[in-house]
Image (cartoon, rainbow over all chains, first blue to last red; front, top):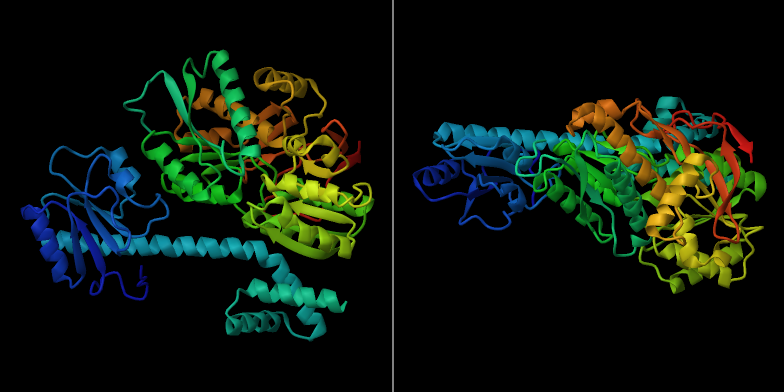
Length: 196
Length: 382
């Protein structure tokens, strides 16, 4: 799985897209419209027991058991998901909610709808992933902040650094060694303890 | 969440504890505590005349399976409430599911803190409710040199980070730190025991969990160490692990917990009696049974008011509620959805029970981010 966080969500070339849809007129149109965006499109049908997870975006026909066919748990998706809803009957909203889609397409749909759903799904998916990553980093920071503070105090008293200098010093060390700042802070505190 | 297709005379809830695998020794007891509470509620007529029905899966001590079963519970069984999880890894596997689908996980286990999900009610101890008091007690009674041994996953590493910090702040010292696989066998502990013999610490601080707990204590006993001068101190070793290792092996070691079977008071005596009546006179209760038990009752009380398992309604009803638990009066802290619990320190006696050697004067406010740690915890010698 390749992440393309640098590409804007409206840049589709080189995207891996799965289309799990019937090859009727609408399905053929979907595949054509997706290919027109220069995305690499893989068609799967009939609906597999588990949808592929090695794609950037998955378009899938709705089915009552779709949530079970999605190969990840809600809240930890491996790809953006666009659910294709039938013209009739109107969907069971609870079942749709359980799939946690990033966008939907209602049959029949236009080529413009395909492009906008692709953009929205990518944007939502990437945004959610950035938020989750930020929460993860915040959690880590909260766990380590006491140690970082202690290491800062050691640098201030031992090396006569100002507070901001002490922090920048640790940040530079962390970046050049490619380790979290908490690792540097821990090392400073440990060394201080050892030297007494 | 709707319950279309399911019996409208029932309240269905999910239950996820391992009955098999290396965590079964403790998770099985949490399952029992949960089922005892459910039975009591149904015997009393259910909740608003509807029966409480558990949908139970066995994730077999595999963290990823907890995530998959949580999805199945919410998507296929259409429950919004899940009682479950012991290890932090399993909780973290369930977390994205309940957060994305807006469910409510009731988590009856002590853990390392530093988490606050709006989709979890935490009913086990946060570090300020066990580690802080334990660190002080051990330093006062045994000495400042601690040797850390733990299972290799999130909880022991995070918990040790906190304990190390507390130790430093109190002028103590960590003289060793070792992690073993959750599947460690007895021979895996031999190098650890040798290292302990070399280091001669005052205290062995253990965050070993599951089956390997028994191997650690057994290896310690085989080595001929004396718990009077160098006890194993733990936040996770309960009456159930002591029973599994043998009372003679466990005697003299120390655990900090909100609840021990020997806690006095009418609420606990009748709880213990009911538990033994259902599961057998030899079956001990423990802190995890107790939390698993009282959290179902808190859920039921709230559900009686909301008459809906909708997470948003339940959550606002639950926050701030209180309950006479076997450990004493507890309340769900409205600011952090953790539970204000009692702090106790117990030492194992030769009957496999913990003698309470210290306890808080009142429930200790949950402080999962340790924002106020360092301030004195009101303790009295028992």
